[in-house]
Image (cartoon, rainbow, N blue to C red; front, side, top):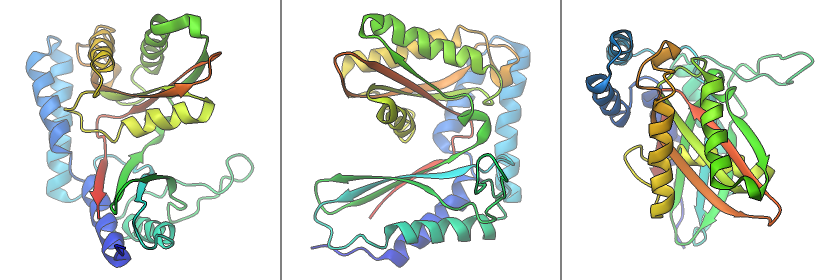
Length: 280
């Protein structure tokens, strides 16, 4: 059975956290450039250019794209044929602690959510979700989730009779309520199905996909495209100041659900979209 070199895993996570929080992803940069060409609102066009300039300056000065360097969120897919995986959680937390210290990233985790809100000082613990896959691969997806976008996320337990129209209405309403708070243009992650907790995980996991891809099922891919068009007709625009570019992409993941339920969750990501996926 295949063994994992956890020193390699730690160094790869450490290095890529530093890069992803400083360098605007190429896929995001290309979408913003394309949106700027099509944008009809002069102010929105100028803001999109400022976002591109921010990315350039961050890279040149080796500084974070945004002061909110987020919670460290991981999805870990573990191959069933791997010999041992017991060190993975400690490995991830070591990498996060080192990266947030060495790259001078803001620590944003508090121990108690209500009573003292004392900062942990090292951005730990990381939030880690595990699943098992066939084969002998270890796949790790990371996302830095800032407060501005995460706070605008919502979940609804719709009735089955609400159907497709209800799902669309909830997603569009969520983006409209969010306005400029999540620093648009945003990436919209949608989870449909499962139950109360799993639809939220589906929504967040959808943000790990490549922005250029489409859902493998045509009807869901069409819904992604339709929602993106309708969201961009809202006029929220870059930074919420109006324009044609409110979102860069919509990603949907779905799962089976109870006959009496239709859970829907929307997890919003800011335009910096700081993420990566590694495979070992």
